[in-house]
Length: 556
Image: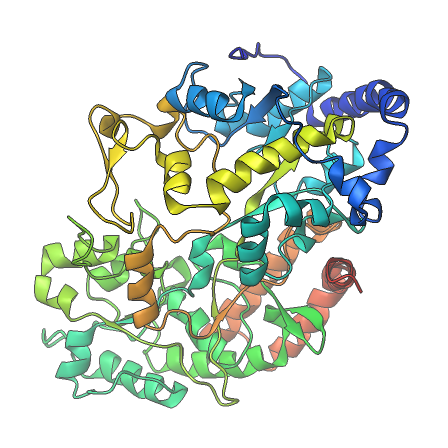
């Protein structure tokens, strides 16, 4: 194994992909035909169902594999890193680690492709949005589902339990080309937090639950001087709270502090629709316009609650301007958990505690409001995260090497929790220690507690498939506070063919409509005009493309 050093070359994305495609098609395919007699075609989805085809993926006993490996990294992984040597010995392999600067990973990956080099394992350079591009260029290997099921049984079982469409998200033209990484933040919706001390002062003993109770509490916060300063300077909610209210009507239009919520699609009558143009949004806007006119909604809601610095902070809430927030996620707000040594709670909790510990201790976490049609709806991240693990096309000629990689992944992510922590943190007793039998509390040992994990190769051979809960105590807090109730996830993953042509203008059009209706610059009836304009400006085309993708992903 040798550390690969890249010299800087000026190669455009399109040129790189074109060259890589030519090299792969001219060099790899004839070799495949000569050596395997069509093994690649047998390894496809249909052929993989037979015992003979599955056998081709079994690692060969005693064979030493050389595996080129692209990890996710913050700093370069040394070629003699502890965990590289550890797993080389454990699995009888020789790892060739490709270190890509994460900020330039796509450019560097494409440069290697242009030089005719394709890594066997790639954790970092391909995302859901770019997967079809690389498939169409012929640089990725197909991954038969039956092979994943056989060689990564625990990972497969857990991932498909959490997200039944796990592998479907990585399909291109009906075939699987990646293993989507899963995120545990998808278990819970975004924040629902109240100033509990204000609620108590205002005589509100029951945490607001229905939309009507939300409205009553928000009006009291705006009108009855909860901070006791004798000045009418408090508001019920600001920008992040809008989504919580929209959700009570069943559809989430975006226009939030968080960009990942902007392009949000939900299922309706067996198809997927964009939230902002659903008729229920009109009813929510009518209510929000009333709140704006009555001084319940912060008149500066357009600029949001965060005034700079760390994105997860709601300065409007921290500084006592609003009494309710939906900003960021629960782990930015939770109170300290005694079971976690030294835990200080979420970043917002900590900032509030610096001002007044009693206010922090009195924070109330509630449910999204129950709306007129009996719905509670609020954003959650998708289980399927942006990066996707892919294998190089050259593995079509050596399917047993793909099997070896899957064997390593199953051991590290699918077996015991200690094996998973070893892959993510390093060797117990050398890099970390824990007195917790459940291994929920890990303490890095000196000098590693002052270094990036990549410097000893921790995380190089790991990825999250949520087979083990490494945030058990914190996640229990979220479940206890019902942060899983009402959580909905985006039904659209990845980019649509016409996104570049239409999406930016459609988002701008949506923001202008929402703001103008809430502030009263346009009447509520303008919503119907907006929907018509949105469809004509490309929304109808993108809805068509979204449903074509959805049908294929669902195998319809």
